[in-house]
Image 1 (spheres, rainbow, N blue to C red):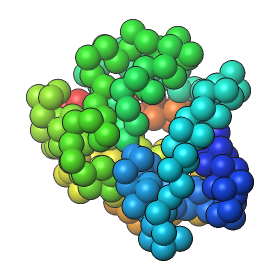
Image 2: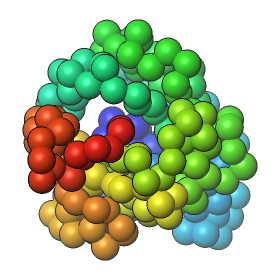
Image 3: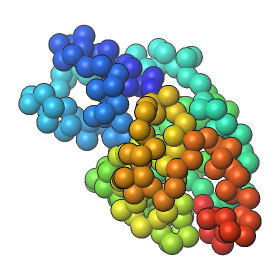
Image 4: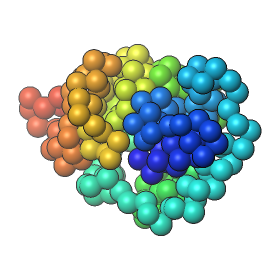
Length: 212
C-alpha cells in the first residue's frame, strides 16, 4: 500500500490524476517495465522520465513507516524447515532491503527470484514461478504459491501450481477474495495464521504430502 500511495501521489503531482484505488487497480504486482506499459495503455503517452526515480526516492524516505502484514514474520519463521522462496516482480536488492528492515535477511538466502532480472515476461505471465520452481527443483504438482494480487494469482495459476489467495494486506478491498478466486486461486486465506494452520500437514489438509 505504501508503494502505491507514493505512485498515486507522484503521478498526480506530474499531471496524471491518480487515486490510491487507481494505482492498486492498474499497477499492483507488476514490475517497472510492465507498469510503464500499463501506464501507456491508460494514459496513451509515455510515462514521465523522472517517475521511477521519484517514486523510489520517496519510498526510501518513507521506509520507516514500513510494517509487516500481521503474522507475516512469525509465519516465515514457522515454516523455516520447509523449502521456500520469493518469486517477485521487484529487484532482488529492493526485496533484500525490506527483509533486513523486518529482520528476515537470513530467511531467503539464495532463493530470491525476480521477474525484473531472471525472466523476460513479468506477472501475470507464469514465467517467474516456473523459473523459481526449476531453481528449487520442485514440480508444479508439489508447489503451493501464496499471492495477494490478481496479477500474481493469474500468473501463479498459469504455472500449474496450487495457489493460496491471501487477503491480508492493506491493499485488499471489498471483493478481493472473489477476485483472487476468479483469477485462479485454489483457496483463499485471510491471515497468515490461517495459512500456518494448513501447514500443519494433517490428514485431509490440502498441503498433505505436498511441499511449499
